[in-house]
Image (cartoon, rainbow, N blue to C red; front, top):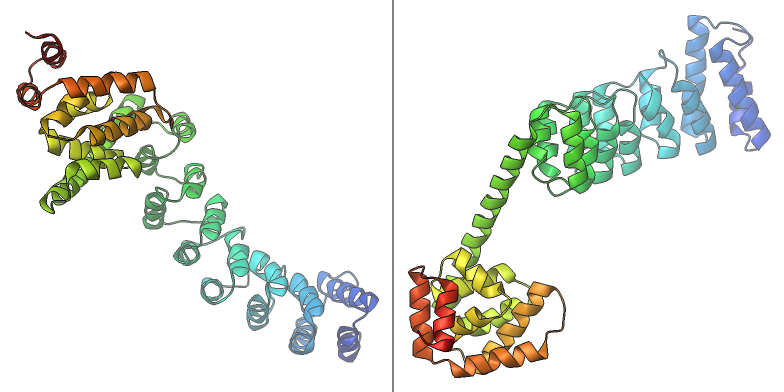
Length: 366
């Protein structure tokens, strides 16, 4: 005990020279690792008391030395360890990353009230309990959650994992770390198959015992459901536009200019009364005759039709240019056909009469 000179150690702590700090670190390390001799219980308690005084008065460099030494001691005083854990992250990191003295409630308190850097230090601990993981997920910070997911030593409850799987629909960064976790329920991996990339779908097939045919059927049903939901919403918007008297032709042009192709299709179905499959075929078939007939039947003037035709073709090809010769040809066709004849053709199409036959008869006569 006489070998431990508290004043000497405090003097080293107050000295700001690099050499004295190095000496302090070596002295503390030697005392606790038993390099010279094993400390008795009372001697260790005395050392911890000296450290408490150092932590209260010392600058960051000294506190960091103490933190690094205490982070590996299983019998370090919890009050001193907690004090260091809540200090600046330069001091706290070693404690948060390594100390087994900290209990879940201590770590959760740090997660809730300290900085992002403190949270990240906890997320990479060798072992993280489900309760601490829940607190980290509750932060909502993507980098913290991603780091936690990548930590194989982190326990994550089923309820929290289900939440993160749903979140992965909008946060792509969660997807791969979730799928690479050994504790992931295959049922959740199957659910993720619907929205992850092709590469991750391949990973799911290779690493989980799932039937590819079942997964592909599920994917197709999901796509159909989404299409029906989109169609329902855009049809409702198209009805609102018509009810407000805004003019479908003008709004169709606005929708195409804004890149709202689904809304344009809904307005076109509203304009013609045609079924979805036939309406899509008319809208995007190469020649444009069906589109011309539909617009003529609705009494749309030549100028608006020209704009609708041009924009729909650019939307189809993904370019900002169109064939001027084709445009001139379809405009001449539009001028030739009569509105009453166009209405008869639309009426035929509503009864599901042959699409191409109706166009030929309009152009050439029965």
